[in-house]
Length: 171
Image 1 (cartoon, rainbow, N blue to C red):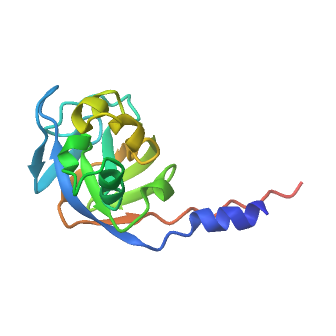
Image 2 (cartoon, rainbow, N blue to C red):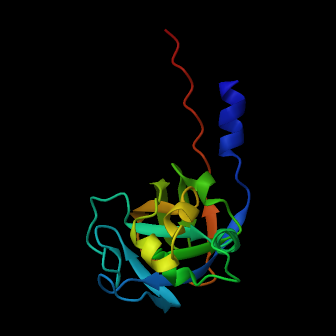
């Protein structure tokens, strides 16, 4: 059964696309949308207030574009500006949950899914009453940088192939 589950978890042929890059220049400031950005190992997403916090699993944050409609619906809104969510990258077409714990590329950059990006109390203030709870379970993905480079809106988001398991040594 483990082999079947590992095979299912390792199968991710879908490719996504980077729809938006958002930077937080400083605390409590509005997010700024840019068309491209530099990602550096040991520095993070340049221009973002968290740049330089390399010991964190939250070097860059991603949000699933398909979840914007879900979140808007839960909050009884027509639509929702992704900048309100305070995440860096808006991605469409590939499951962020499936990228947790594995390596993937966005453009030139190699990243590793480090776990869920849980909402903070600020979501209650920004989205209104119930905003925190509406985001629970769909808050996005935190990632670590493995290899830096440039990212651009429109770049492909694609999982790296899973490494083949090493054969067991014979005794």
